[in-house]
Length: 319
Ligand code: ADP
Ligand code: MG
Image 1 (spheres, protein in one colour):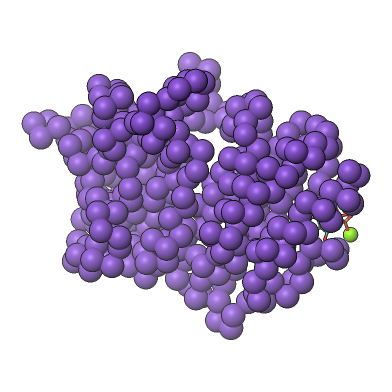
Image 2 (cartoon, helix red, strand yellow):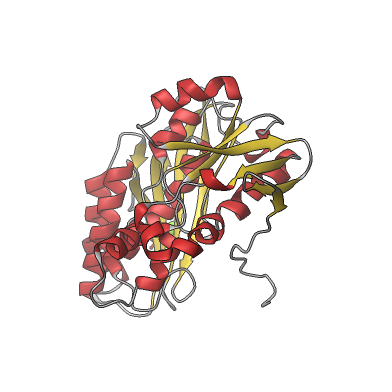
């Protein structure tokens, strides 16, 4: 397939399958056109995934299609945006029909589930790299920023932490156990918390999605808001699978492991119970509180110790 056949045969069907009325013009022209509801603002975010950096070489194309869009959509969730559409920048070393078909399937499954229409893209030859630009909308002024946390706010997280990071140890396991398969599912098939993000809009004072690890990503809220935090070690939510397979290491994985795409947020204490009641049962956990004193502290019930991020930094020092 040449470039134009590839777009027509592989990506046009995805655009058709995911179309929504907010996209007035999808792929095929020099640009796409998105309708904006009156009084709304556009929230947009770009994520790039590079083979060998963000996913292993020879990674399943079906998982890649899902995961790439999920990672990008997670930023919309953290902003509290309603998902609308996305564009795809695809760089491929060669055109492989089987690979493209599987990739388009994973992409289409994710786009349908997240409510994101494929509105356009760019297709080039080179080392395998994917860029997803995702668009969402919010009523003007209501997007959740990292900078809104106040002293005394509770710190909450969704779901369980550390599973996706632990899954990296099991990627090459020929016959993974039930627990290992649970962890692998969290890595291959992340679910961006879009519904929760919409619920947090107007309630949470700040939010971030956990892509680089709780400590690193909560650190972004603390830095942007000019506050500190104290976390309760025993409250950090960890799955039965993580505890069973990585008992001793599970805390470090939950604190510093990336790729979970859960949401970490801050909220005034008097708004917690209504938020918890509106969320899925058991989805939210209070893990600590925002403090005036800067820094991030972890309490084991007896004493507080400072915690530092070991999250991934593409341009960080090697040690
Ligand atoms: P131009 O040269 O004007 O930038 P292109 O030839 O790159 O246009 O793309 C032609 C059309 O195909 C555009 O509407 C573009 O959005 C769409 N397109 C290109 N690659 C993809 C892709 N991978 N997925 C969806 N649409 C794509
Ligand atoms: Mg053009």
